[in-house]
Amino acid sequence: MKLTGKVWKFGNDIDTDLIIPARYLNTSDPAELAKHCMEDADKTWAEKVQKGDIIVAGKNFGCGSSREHAPVAIKAAGVACVIAKDFARIFYRNSFNIGLPIFESEEASLKIAQGDTVEIDADNGVIKNITKNEKYAVKPIPPFMQELVNAGGLIAYGKMKFKIK
Amino acid sequence: MSMNIAEKILAFKSGKKAVEPGELVIADIDLVLANDITAPIAIKEFRASGAKKVWDRTKVALVPDHFTPNKDIKSAEQAKMLREFAHEQKLTHYYDQGEVGIEHALLPEQGVVVPGDLVIGADSHTCTYGALGAFATGVGSTDAAFGMMTGKAWFKVPESIKFVYKGKLNKWVSSKDLILHTIGDVGVDGALYKVMEFTGPVIDKLSMDARLTMSNMAIEAGGKAGLMNPDETTLEYVKGRAQHKWKVFTSDKDAKYEKVIEYDCSKIEPVVSCPSLPENTKPASKLSKVAVDQSVIGSCTNGRMEDLRIAAKILKGKKVNSRVRCLIFPGTKDIYLQALKEGLIETFVKAGAIFSMPTCGPCLGGHMGILAKGETAISTTNRNFVGRMGSTESSVYLASPAVAAASAILGRIGTPEDLK
Image (cartoon, rainbow over all chains, first blue to last red; front, side, top):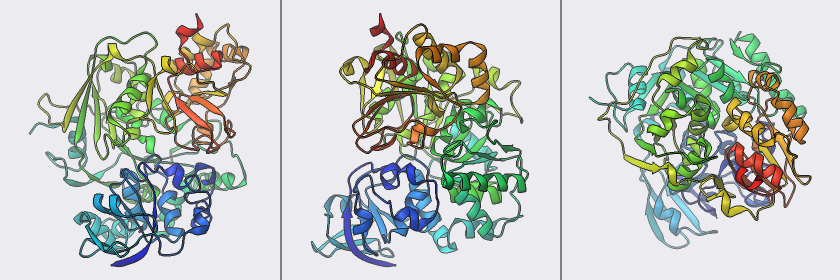
């Protein structure tokens, strides 16, 4: 998988209330959630973001609530993937479960700037910063997570491995 | 092989003799829960999978507590979806209006979660049940749907950090102050992916209500679970309310930890977390210049009997400051009734506070106590992120029930000592 896009840069500890405020959680419609994605961090972000853009953030991205609406909103806003130094645990699980690609890279998190264009080569674990002509290593995806991705997500994996009533 | 409590529960539930940190297990769960925000996605996923019946109708709990009583038409649709699914699947643990409580106050109180259980919940504060010696962790809606379908969940066995609390608690210092102090020390990602195991002579003396408050906030340090070893206090609490058999797991003396952190509690004063992260802690005594517009007492963190009793003790015969709205939310119907019996509700209402039915309401800026631009709240809830309780230009300070009640009277942040 190769993804190329323009970067929106965010800081450390971006919590799920910033990603999608609770006042909009009276729906689970992805398109509706996407309209308010990142609203409390940047009021007009949802209007500015383009399909294929990439979010790059600092440490502990997605901390706070377990709301799956957070990765759902990001994905529905058209974001191709999220790169961060690391992710809060529940957000990490949720992203794999709903098929939002996420990548951990401290170097990329530090060196990529707002507006840079980057290319992620997921198979080879490399992020190329086209704007700055730099390369950064990506933390490999754990084998089990890869197995989930290959199965087509957690639910598909469950149907394959277990008896469902 | 020696193991800590987290490893013992995960090993037992995955049919293994032993597990080690980093190992991946697929384990049998004892309960999966979701609320009116997270269940709709889980139900949609469940239906889309082609599953017709949940794996065990006695092990799926649906608790519509966030936007209820329905705050608007969209919320009503979500609550209706839960109701229809619960009735269709004949779920034992569905709590409609009149029976509902705040999920993490309700399920331990009703004996739905007991020591030794493995619980996943589509709510990040599911870690609350760690106080009972149950391994409980928050997940998203898809994980909850997977649990509803299969009765299973996957876990990477986490490393554990052991926290040891020693010394004597100072006056007005509660378990809320201990956990805020701890988060202030390790940071909001200080226990990322890890188990926090709370131990020591101070923990041993805490009531069950106080212990649940501490485990509740493990997630605010990034923790996967916040565990305590069951003891007499735990068993006393579960006897008579347990709805299924419990099993006591405790950490071996030579169990392994990623690290051990000790606190001398005699050095801890009442703590307040300042905006906009729970790690921004300061002694309450240093914040006496911060004026408050609203004081919230309640939530899955601090809406239990002990919390209401402390608040009532402070508010009794006093008046809430005329510039402050003081909102009090009991955790459950039983707590509501007990507060009624003990005369606490009369105390609150006479003091000029508002006493509500149980709801998550204002904690997440849902309804029933939203903040306007420029307003400040002191709150016994668990998060003070930007916009958490309303306007992105409002501020939330987290504190214990004692500090929140005293601040409601003072009109500024303070402790009960300042009322003298």
